[in-house]
Image 1 (cartoon, rainbow, N blue to C red):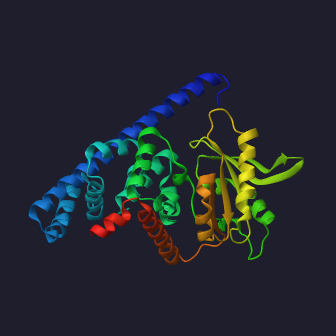
Image 2: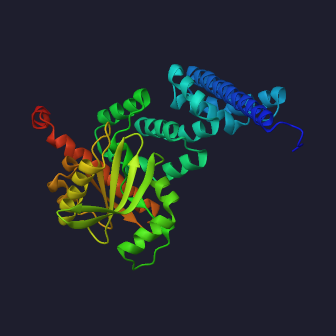
Image 3: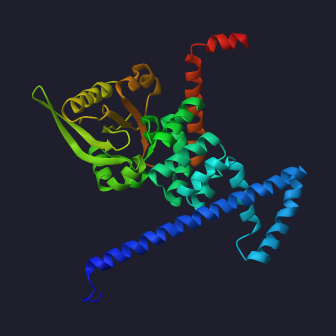
Amino acid sequence: MDKGIDITLMADLRALIDRSRERAALAINYEMSSLYWHVGRRINSDVLQHRRAEYGKQTLPRISKALSNEFGSGWSTPHLRHCMKFASAFPNEAIVSTLWKQLGWSQLKVLMHVDEPIKRDFYVEMAKVERWTVKTLRSRINSMLFERTAISKKPEETIAQDIALLKDEGKMTPDMVFRDPYFLDYLGLQDTFSEKDLEDAILIEIQRFITDLGSDFGFLSRQKRMTVDGRDYYLDLLFTHRRLRCLIAVELKIGEFETAFKSQMELYLRWLEKYEMLEGENPPIGLILCTGKNSEHIELMRLDESNIRVAEYLTKLPDIKLLEAKLRQSVEIARSRIDSTLPNAGLLENEK
């Protein structure tokens, strides 16, 4: 840079140019997404009017050719189908108009292909809050993040309420934060490893580990010492979570969940609550990562009441079809169990 130019002046000019470019990009994205939605809605309306899917198949290539001749490339038949899908997936103009202010067309194009509305709403809000790139969004969907969160196992009404809370007030519930299982394949662990090997590998890859946990996690400490009645205890990993506004205690275990893990974690949480919790923070949450969950043990011990979560971790990615079947089954089992515990469940069943 020319030494005769003031450094502060150049910094200010760069900031002005960068801000202007950012505003221009946002404006272009807004207009582009708005255009694609209105184009899709108009074509959908025309196809619906003729009430024939075959009509749409015959007409789209003609529309594409006519628009391309007049406005140049960018109006291919596949693109027009994206526009139609966009308008179908997000039919409410008032809602979608806020989305294209916050998410790019590439992100919206990924989201529109999530068929279940409640699941799509989850990814929309998480993408906005955690500022996912298109690559991250695809990765989260492909790894079945929704099915891996505790929220997926709740009734749809509860899920909708939690998503609305995040959308309207920016408040995230623990059920939206914690996952099961966690994929730790990037740690490169061999078939046999110790808890220390696992902890060491996580610290080496701490950034990727935090990315898998969620963007609001912040690493605080390893082997956090806690002294109770003159005896020292050591917590494997300590994090903080910005939106939950609480400490997260993480214990790493080799093998399946055991009942003793609960009392150990309860001690850690009470100690953190007494000595580390700041004014205005929520009580700390414990996360126990195991290679196996022992679901009935966890259910009977009512770990949620103690603010403790248990999740499996996988050091090697399983076959995606098997994983999908397992996760969907666990969601169905959890929801049916909740339905069976509702006060009027038996009464409703008899009425049927």
